[in-house]
Length: 256
Image (cartoon, rainbow, N blue to C red):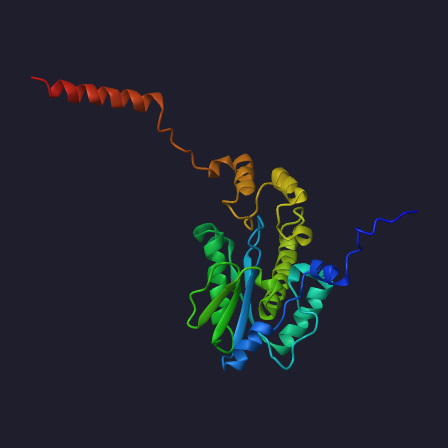
């Protein structure tokens, strides 16, 4: 059999490039060398779900006692996250802040998330001199704040915060599942999966659902229509007639 020598097998270097790199402590160490310490990482969990609060966490890792295996919480199993949660809390400075449903409904999900992130940073036992935050938006903190897109997979302190926030919120959603059986919060943690959407359609929203998210608003209109304020029709026939009559009267009074 003649082999096509132009077709080469992927090299080991190519295979390594295809695998996403783990978060590292490189950026934190660069700041330490410049005499900047403490350095905190912060991240939130629960921006996308239809139910439950947003949970933010801030973490200052101990450079001499960093638990092995820290990475973006989305790359870890639930068991790995639980194990690392305990180790992070035992070796690092950790704080958590929660943005309630009421705040999300009042301020919108982005503002509520940023509020919780800032509260988590302020609540740290030691005031950081530099903060890394996951995403595009910097926080209004007393120290320097650096936003890192995809930071939970790049900066180790952010990755640690993502684990703390995720585990804390998952535990809260499991507790809410006891209060609201039938919605499956313990399984999907409030995200808009088909099972959750089906439960919303059958049972209607709970006090733990975010009122202005579209599927929740639709379920509320179906099950509790009296809570939905009617939108006035600015182009109704009555309004047009009144406007026309008023215009005629004005024109008549303005004549010679």
